[in-house]
Image (cartoon, rainbow, N blue to C red; front, side):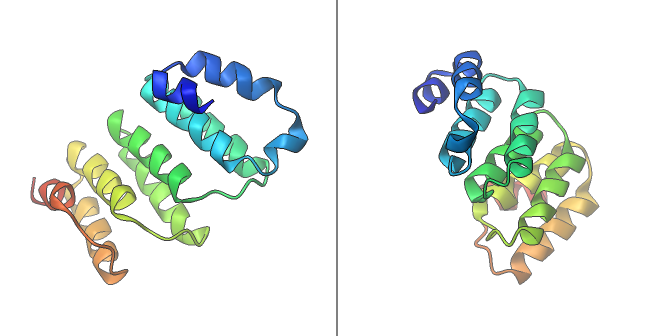
Amino acid sequence: TSACEKGGAWEQALQLFNIMEPSQLETAAVTFNAVISACEKGGVWEKALQQFRVMVQSDVETDRTAFNAAISNCEKVGKWKEASQFFGGMAQSKVELGTISCSAAISACEKAGEWKKALQLWSGTMQSKVESNTVTFNAVIS
């Protein structure tokens, strides 16, 4: 599935994923992440978010990579509420916040004109001592 992700072949990634045995999925965070990323890169955001939800329902440990992909996916398609929810879900899942997830969530809010929410998220990231980068600052300032 990683080769499919890199090649933007989301349909093939989903096909391979769907023929995997359920027992293989129990420890397949990397596979889920690759499928979510392939869907994101293929522009099928609904499928990417659906795979994230399947990951959670399958009790596969969601990691920062999965959350980053979900939040970035939401940011690209203007789903700021969903991006904020996934961002909040990181803390609930005890997943360490990172620069990518913070920047993507803030950028999603900024693109939707939700500057108060963007500032709120940024303030929270500063309290969590997450390092901000140029993308983060640009999103907050814009």
